[in-house]
Amino acid sequence: MPLRKFLCVLLWAFCLMAQADDYVRITQARQLVSGGQYVVATYAERASALLAMRSLWLGKHFRTRSLADNLANRLTEVPDDVVWTLEEDDGKWLISRGGDYLAADGGTNLKFTERTGATRWTIAESGGHFLINAGSEAKRYLLCERVDKATYVFGHYVWQNYMNAVTLYMRADCDDAGDTDDAARADSMVTGSQKVLCGLWSAEALSQVEWSGIRVLDLRKLELPDGLLPFQYRPKNENTLVLVNAQSASLVPAEWTMVVSCSEDGNDLLRGGTIYDGDSLEWPFAFGVGQGQLAYSRPLASDGGYETLCLPFDAAMPDDVQAYALDSLSTDSAYFVEADTLKAGQACLLRYVGAETEPTLRLSSLAGHVAPLPAQGLLQGLYGALQVGEDGSGRAFLDEDGTAFVVAAGSSRLPAFRAYLKTKSSEGSKMRCK
Image (cartoon, rainbow, N blue to C red; front, side, top):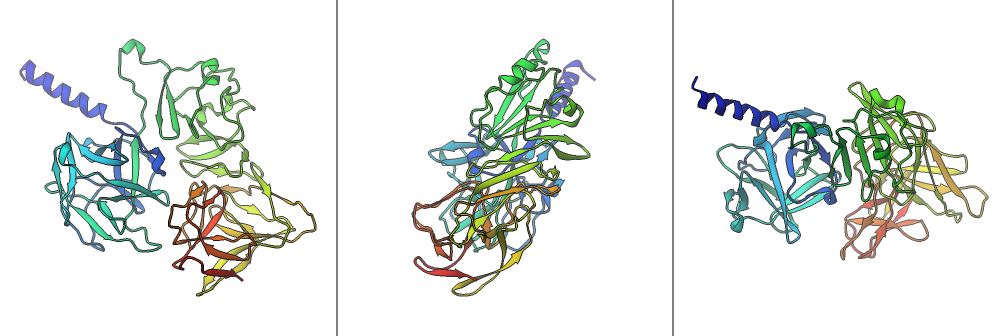
């Protein structure tokens, strides 16, 4: 083989190896980063990457490249032909690959074009997944596969129906480019609210890691040093999480709280802590939790009214607090049945039945697994605050008396770890709790 041809083949192989980056699943729109590289996958039990596009009607199947089962939270060895670049432009997003941009023609077709003719897409979160929209709010667009043609699927949004949602994975490897002698330097990369560290970090350097805007600190790529110190800048009274490799778990100091030990055999909570009421919680995946490792508390009303609750762990109710799960709905009533325990990710109603005038709810975890996202249901739980826009239709909040759900008023807000009722009722209507 001529030397020139051999060098070309070697360079091609090196480029292929360089593309084997990790991609982590994101679940919130604020985790989207302009210029970031993403895999768009179908919302199904098997995460399948979407390549170019082809025209389809809703309800039909389409061919995709399977990457992982059970909607994995991390994809590895991702080929370049399923990776898209997102670029923010005046509050919307440009979608491109290899310098070619996607554009909707107003019908049922997509095409590749130059940047000036590209469609500005809206990407909205939906229950941990995303809706990609090129038109009015009444339509949702799903990117699908076909190598020789680019088109999209469209359909009217159906209440309580997420069939048009997609799952997004973002490239999250640290940037190890540079001189070979510098390959072991301390390095990091931020993807939304997750910071991944790699390279060599001293105990002192780790203690001084910057936490601003960070919810998850990923140390799984590190061989943790001896003599670890407390984090100097970790926010207090915020729901943050640390991920470590199980091989280094024995080095984690007692001062570190909310630490998950990760291995191929499973992920388990190594150090527990408190889940702070009202502060958003963003956990990247499920993990095992022991009895009493997690704690949550908040004040309760003593007037006999209902309140809503949704937590990521199983918990037993105190004797003076009753919990209720949604059973059914009628035109003007929501019917609930009493529940012995709170299930991870499942929203419920609470009512204090004790004698204290200023009661406090105190819950601790039962042994099991956490739910990283609230379960989908008519009574929809939240791990983060919900800010309603000008139109609150489709969501009903408990009223001040805690006796009925009413359609949310415009610009109203619901704190984290509460729940709202999905409804088709018009503004001003009530659904009594029974």
